[in-house]
Image (cartoon, rainbow, N blue to C red):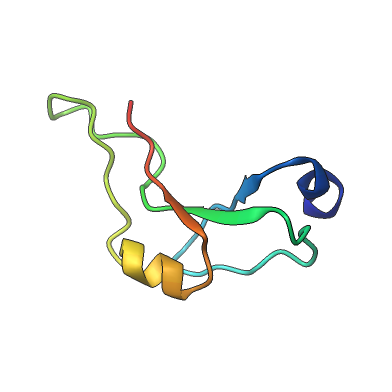
Length: 75
């Protein structure tokens, strides 16, 4: 899917699951890598609908792993 879609996109988001990641097999050179820094969903026991960040990552580590951008979803 990334091979077909990334020639038409400025960036592609990859979800990191279970503490690990696998880079895509084929991405257009013109498309940036963007990886999320938050868990899916939010804690509805606290006000503000703030996302829970992935505990094993940091923005610095995501960039060191090869990302061009870090995604944080704000509800």
